[in-house]
Amino acid sequence: MRSKFRPIVLVGLMVLGLGFQRASDADDLQPPEGFRALFNGQDLTGWYGWNPHASVKLEGEKKEENLAKQRAEFAKNWTVENGELVNDGHGPYATTEEEFGDIELLIEYKTVAGADSGIYLRGTPQVQIWDSNQTFNPEKPTRRPHLGSGGLFNNAPDAPGRDPAVLADRPFGEWNTLRIRQIGDRTWVWLNDKVTVDNAVMENYWNRSQPLPAKGPIMLQTHGGEIRWRNIFVHEISPEEGKKILAEADTKK
Image 1 (cartoon, rainbow, N blue to C red):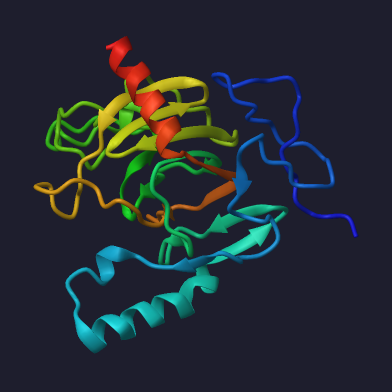
Image 2: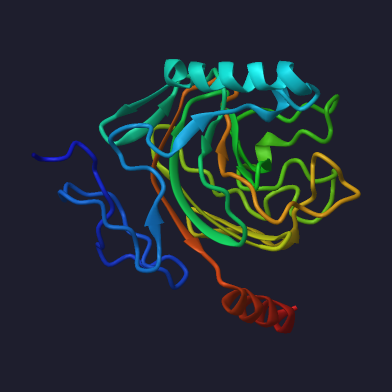
């Protein structure tokens, strides 16, 4: 039976040395070499609902009840349409059943005016997604959506990587491509082939005095506006590969 998913196949475009491939009408999901799919394009398998902000202060039975409720609510706000993972802007975050440490993540998204979303790494906020058409409000000087998406918004204001290095968002109605690399607490982000975060430390939002946890889930945030995701691929970076990448990055610095 022909799949409804519009998977990624190679059309001759290489993103920064990786075979990150654009969507086409091919029948089979084809992750780039060395990657595997986290979303099958057909259903919510491998994902559940969890907004950690809604449970972080709870303990014991109350926390267990809250987590169970969020899992039950997940399918009310998240659906699959034409191979796309769709959120209506509400409900718990789409959370991977698996936990990840050092990774390279490829993902595409399309959103709407007024958007405010993001990608949590190791269960920690976040690689930010904005509506970059918003006007800067001097009364909220640390909120800078006009600078665009792809920054580490939950770093301290003016910390390296907090705001994206360049404005790389595409117009509404077009798909945006994110490539995210995280090794330890050091993070790189490419948005639409442009470097928005270059080897910056991602702070632990939950406890800034501590480093990021060694592992955690990938989470797709809900924040009031419809957002669509597709072509979600992950490559788990081995210790040897991670050491090589960090050594090259240090030499570059």
